[in-house]
Image 1 (cartoon, rainbow, N blue to C red):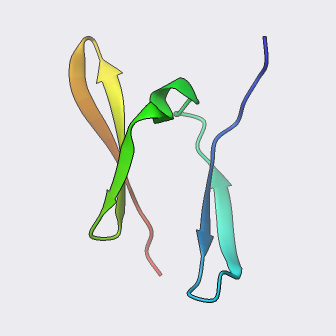
Image 2: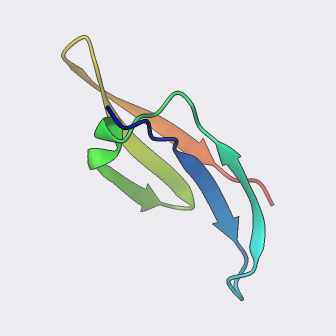
Length: 60
């Protein structure tokens, strides 16, 4: 079995790396559905057969 790690990486308007951080709560399977709206990354997760979302906001 292959182990994967998910990172949130943030770039500025010139695509220079600002920073990154691991997100151990997420797995590659849970990242199958996501979108960005108003500067927030929304990641769909299944919680006990109910639709849920992880919302990731970057302050800068």
